[in-house]
Image (cartoon, rainbow, N blue to C red; front, side, top):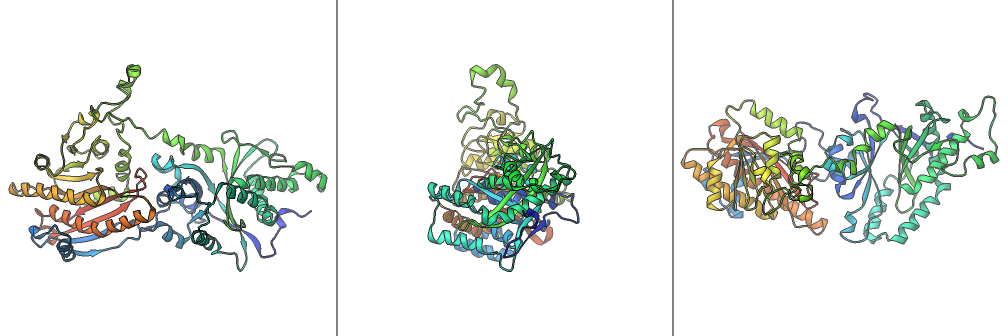
Amino acid sequence: MVSPRSLSSSSGIYEHQSLFNREDPNSINSHCFGVICHRQYTNRICEALRPTERNKEDDGWIKIIVDSSAPLTSIQHDRESSTSCFSQRVQGRTKLNNNVENRDKANDQITVIPTAPEKGVRKNRTGYQILVIRHALISPSELPPMARKQISWVGRLTHRTFLNSQQNGENSDENAKKKLRIEGLLAKKKEKEKNEKDLSSKVVENDGIFAKVADEILRKLTANGFNLEKDTLRMDVHPKSLNDTICSSLQLAATYHTILLPSGAQGIDDTTNKNACSGPDHGPIKMTRSATNCYMVVNIVVHSLLTSNSIKEVFWGISTNKEHWEDLNQRMNDHATKEVLLETTDSITGYDRRKQDTSRSKHSSSQIRKEVPVSRAFYKLNQVFDDEHLLRTLASLRKSKIGPIGAGLDIGASPGGWTQVLHHKVKLPTVVAVDPGVLAKRVDELPGVIHLRGEITTKDVVDGIAKYAPYSIVVCDACVDAHNLLPKIIESLEGVNKILMESEKSLFILPLCLVLTFKMPYKTVGSLNKNLEKLSNVLPEYLSRLALLGCCCSRENDGGKVEVRYKICHLFANSESERSVISTFSM
């Protein structure tokens, strides 16, 4: 019999590649993670773990310079003339490429394991996606709970095994996916079952790489103090259809390995081999499916081609029970869902729904704290103000700012989730909440919160907004079509500015922070991308008009120029058809 460690392929040699950053093996960015997440969150999780923009000073922000030397009254509201004014005032603009997958593909830091798509326009966006993320800048356990609840499994990976040959089919995977799209080969239930059978039947063809991986895993286990007589091992193999094949390979490697033989033994015959390795659960290694009772965990992600089921590469790593369970997976999926606190309120009365449950009233009244979110939207703005670049920018700009921080303006505030963030997290002294709907009682009763009940363009609301000016933060999560949102906000704030100019007051205090959620019509990915492109084209124009409103009382500073920085984000609490725009304005 031939030892698995000496197996090779006629088309090349199997080699191992360490995924550690040897210069700093203890840093988090020296690690690689395998992740299984909801398909709709693939890009967002990739961007959070491995941002495409490496420059910390830039970090994906677009910068434009708006010249305010021309009179403010010359701005026109029709599209043609406003575009002309915009082109005269904007001094410079840096474009941002929003295609996360293409940019990361260039530096080969993220590997998306191909999975068969579901049939139908909507179903092909559901299901799960397997990712391999190398040199992650943060651990998945550090993601917000809204992100971690979309992750079903995380495993630490340390090595990559692949076939080193002159032609190892680097582009085969991409060609396979293109072929699937062109020919419209959509996997059905019977076809998927057949593919899984075919994948398992390729053991003879692929057992070379599996045997090599198994042999190296066994060596690492023993080097890390794994006791084959006492300790138990958990195997996490993805795709799961390969679990029995790889476990059997590991048992076979353990049977042949010399460390398993008693002192003076010379070898094992074929009969002993068959009896010792009759299946994945039978052999020298004690296997368990328990994540809490195992001593060590082996994580394996197999990258195979959809069409041929041939193995391209295998990512693997070994973790202790604590590293795998307590530090990672115990903070994912349902465990993370428990961290997403939420107590909804009645849309008519504003009282907490749980308080109105008479059968639980003895306990519920004292349990609901005022800072507990009243809506899921709370976690959108909460994530924004966890953005290090935004906080760093505002802090640096305010170092030279003399005077108090202005009020906060929340447009479309009901039931008050974003108002809670401005009050509790940002610590604004005054928050003006504008919405024709009812605010939650817990929010309405907060000190410094003023509710203006009505549409933002009505006279009473415009007068109310002017009363509490100036503002240093403006946010909006209104349920308004994306193409109508900005014109409404501009119309209202220009009306407020006219009132303030009569009393020589300012609408904004710079630096100003602006956060908007755009809700776009969404039926297909193509329509979403089309609306995103429209938004990207008109956004600088509207931001320049807001900049002119902000600097109308400060033209003497810096030659009357306003620097606007903004970026379009897909926050974890955003739906698939929503995007959030974060922007800062400074002189």
